[in-house]
Amino acid sequence: MKTNKFLKIALGLMVIFTVASCVQDDDYTVPSSMGDEENTNLNNLIANGTEITMAELKAKYLTEPDPGDNSAVLIDLNDYIKGYVSSSDRTGNFFKEFFIQDSPTNPTIAIKVLVNEVDTYNQFNFGREVYVSLKDLYVGEERIENGVITIGGGTETDQYGTTVTSLGRIQTNSHVFRSPTTEEMTPLNLSFSEINGGLVGVFVQVDNAEFADDLNGKRYFDPSQDFDTHRTLQACAGFGYSTFQLETSSFSTFRDYLLPTGNGSIAAVVNKTYDGSSLVLALNSTDDVAMEGTRCTPLNIDDFTLVLDEDFQAAVNNTNFDFPGWTNFSEEGSRVWREKTFSGNGYIEFSTFGSGDAVNIAWTVTPGIDMSTLDNAFVNFEAAQHHLDSPENTLEIFISSDFDGSDVLGATWEPVSANLPTQANSWYEFVNSGLIDISDYFGTIYLAFKVTGSGTDETLDGAYQIDNYKILAN
Image 1 (tube, one colour):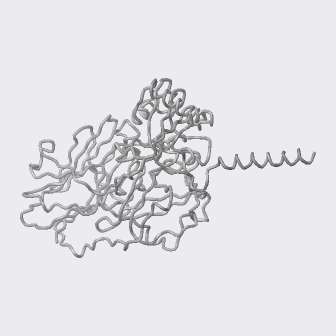
Image 2 (cartoon, rainbow, N blue to C red):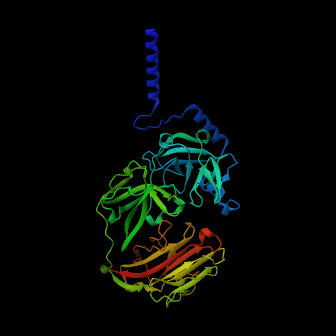
Image 3 (cartoon, rainbow, N blue to C red):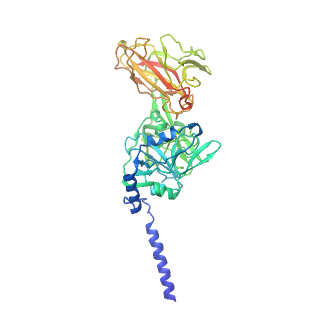
């Protein structure tokens, strides 16, 4: 009897040891070789399914016959998408979800996969090549009108509309397959102003960034808040700063880490706030923050000579913009740029809201500047947005040296890069453009502001504002 009892105990210990040995160790290494069943399922999917792009998948939702009801769409074809895991819940900053982007380098788009399980990094590790079999799954929003297109396993409906719900474990096992490949993920290098809603889920990097001056001594998470904390990131842009918000979950393992005080780079995933109202960055790990350099200092306007200075203080509220030397032109639709004032500040604005036009395109062109008398010359202005819901509702900047003062469409216009407001900026928050170098141009040059939108599409009926247009030289 004693021998049998001893054998049972020994056998039990062996079972415990065997089970424990199968659990991943602290290296969290994901095996490169998949199980036979997963390999077979993946091979069958590739052999018999049809690969579509993430853009095509999103279009199945965005072109839903009645998008006003926010209905999720059932995928009934044997389609699949391929992507690379761009987010990680290893530090707790993501929860029951992961993003996949279309390429490990130079990505253009990403999509969220909603799963009913935690610690997904053990299976869907950062950089893992993943295939999603879409048949019988849904694509839509997890929360009504948050704008984050998501793959889900089911739907639920309330008085506001229909949203997708998580894939159950069985659905995940039968629809989401890993390949043996884990790629090195190269973050897409952008400025804060270049981050837009079309990049939600993409792993990006911003250089020359730092946390705002008033955050010295603060931590990633504010203990007075319940769920998420936003910390302001900034980068020098001309005479001021461009800004963006970093969002940290109360469940993250780095919540109590002190914010770095230097300048450098940050790599993170583009995401949205819970209600979808603003773009944010979300860290996979603080290992992706390298801010040990000297903090930046905006340029001092006193170091420059002011050649032209238009502050729009002569604006007459709610009238068509008609300042001397400026051109106000509607390429399509009934709207033109308008003069505006608010709290004693004058500016100009183009809004498509309520125009009734399917397409609105309007230009305003600055007075000409004779470059023959200038050596080092720069343009600087401030711009703001409100009710901006889509990156397709655009503000573009152009420059021309052959504009005749009246024929806007007959001129040759060259696009110009500038720091411009996006959905990530608060409404009515004026953003400094940075210095636009025009020193290499000859003759008389003109700068143009062009807005494209719609008065019938609610996602394209936002507005842009321009203020404090300057030409400077040094």
